[in-house]
Length: 135
Image (tube, rainbow, N blue to C red; front, side, top):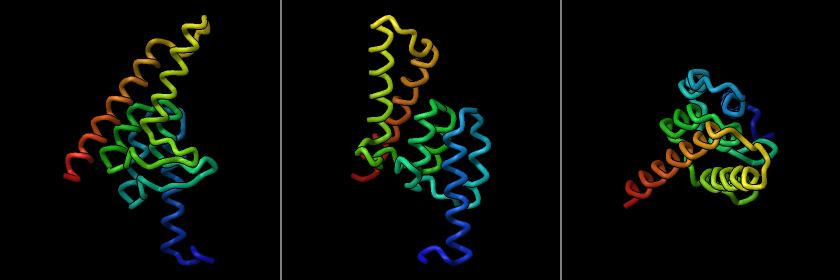
């Protein structure tokens, strides 16, 4: 068994806790700080959809959690099991909501669409910082 040590078990416990907290629909970023402070990997890749906590926070539309994860070093360029980066994920969400609204479906409210646009901006800034740092 690969993860049969106390340290490995604690690592997985913290990573799973962070992933779950990022996915929850409340937008309280404070709850993410404890597992991060205890060493949870913000780039932990797992779960049923092979996503990171950042992907989960985006999926749930949690702007504040996205910001906390990016500030803690989450990599927005990690691809999920469908080869989507976090930016791909949010762009698809924006496109889908705009398409639904144009077809007469209520979709998300304008506030939610603005939140997706804000998440997109945060991701683009993080990607730019990574690109600059790599040079």
